[in-house]
Image 1 (cartoon, rainbow over the protein chains, first blue to last red):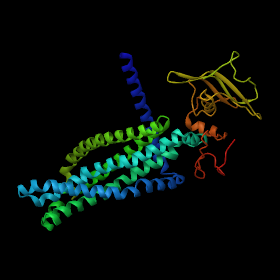
Image 2 (image 1 turned 90 degrees about the vertical axis):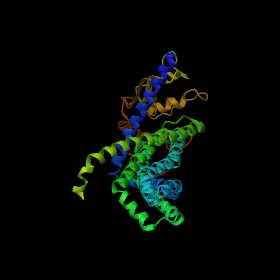
Image 3 (image 1 turned 135 degrees about the horizontal axis):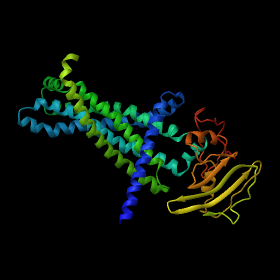
Length: 270
Length: 125
């Protein structure tokens, strides 16, 4: 039993080391790809597949999040006579947390699964070996464009989701529940700061990078056959989901610390 | 599994060899696929590796351009050892080879992206 535990531990440590090396190589290659114009066509292609084609589902996600929040929170606020504050609650929740996290989870399923399946299939059919045999680094050719596309477009997708979430909350709160329109927006504007929006958008960089790197790694390291590719897709989503939650918690703590440090100087900036 | 013969050669060695693998062993976990195998490929000659399905032919051939690294042993190209090179250095070596995979995956590398431009999508021998 001890030997089995030892073997499992060594395997886990080995896998963690492999992933760390892959992550470093991917990040370095992605950074260098900015300076190589040959990679731009590859990046545009991935941006279309990853970003543009995700817009409809992201907007649907954001819209429903805002509407559901409004439906669930209205009764509690109306009971205290604070229904006009519904806008603050919905908009801060959407732009700071629910928008970024739900968009990231949706992308982990849609985009992450597709990346893992595509690269996993290429792996088991020796296409990645074929790229290597032609003197090209497969991480530079296959992974870097996907990582860059996710890094660059996830924040924009979060902005789309936030917009639809705000509109969804407005539709339910003002149109359905007849909350005063000007009071709704007035309280929202006073409660939601540019910092809140920026935090949500910056989270998108981290979430997008995590989804892309984890999904690409799982594709590169999947086992043989259809079962191996399928298992890799499942593992990629689970790992991406856990990473999103862990990153969200970590970033929440970090941004809170930054805000508390610099908030006293806010009046100097104006 | 491919095993070395008594004289430690799968095929007779020759100083005109352009490619050579020397005493390579390859294991996947506890599964030994190549066991102390040596092979020299002579320039200007056609070398054929024949064996039953699953005996390690593809594993052996992948070692020639270090798509797989041996568990032990050495790989030489034009008398230069290549199995201990990193991937960046190997990219330069691999441009001297054409490799046709079993499934025949052809990859149209964007113009100038790889070290070597592909002029047409055709089998490379």
